[in-house]
Length: 65
Image (cartoon, rainbow, N blue to C red; front, side):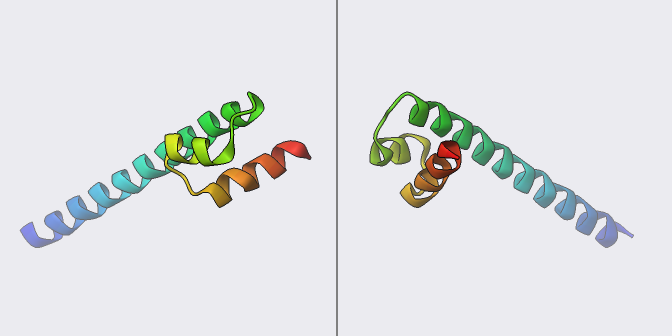
C-alpha cells in the first residue's frame, strides 16, 4: 500500500501547486487592475506583474465596460 500512499501524496502536492499558481495569477491581475486605473502604460504593467501584455489589454477592456 505504500505505492498508493505515494500516488496520493503526489496528487495532493500537484493540486496544491496549481492552487498556488492560480492564487498568484489572481493577485497579479488585481495589481494590474489597480495600475490600469492609475494610468500606467501596458508594457510597464506587463513587466511588473509578469503577465502577457495581451492579458493586460483584455483586463483594460473589461474595465472600460
